[in-house]
Length: 274
Image (cartoon, rainbow, N blue to C red; front, side, top):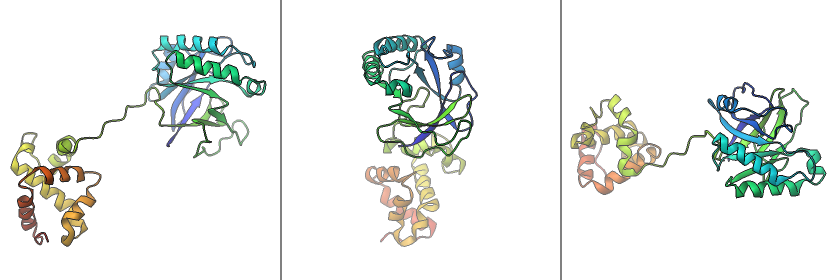
């Protein structure tokens, strides 16, 4: 699990360097000092991920269903994704008074509205401040068991936390699918190969001679480092990140592979394959 820095504040603020997530309050009016406007949220999203917080009345028997209904309505107007993390601000006094049942009702109701990542401040997002307000120590490097976030400092206009970066935060780029080996050379290294004169242009990359130059380039710049007597094994070992998948596909699917490699070895002054 990786961790990222998040900052939450009652009012919009300028995020500090290193802050990836901005958390702002979308309600409840009268329970939080300021309900962030759509314009303020859109401004906060420029260059950052965003997550919403809802503050209910701070009493043990607060209406968790009503809090969820209000938050779901605000998120719907905002266009917030249903798989994005959403937070309920439950302060310690409410937990101590027995507010867990109301918090559970909020979570269940949010899920019934389609929001799959409802979390509570004080339970899944905990607070451990080791220094006085205004003093900032090092960020935690590990989250407590069962938690997705830990607040660790009061920096004045905002509080600092670390969060699990694997959650589907709003604004986080979607993961890209892994390439298929057959498309690897054209999708990933074409620019590098053109820059080094291995391919002349897109069409040239499809020719037999370009395929030979491509293989020669990999052997010369990567595989040869492993030693001449283990060139083929060294090639695969050294291209794990960039070329091994293509090389394996090449060997399996190109009937000329062995002949090409023999010619390449001769061209480079290397001994024949064992």
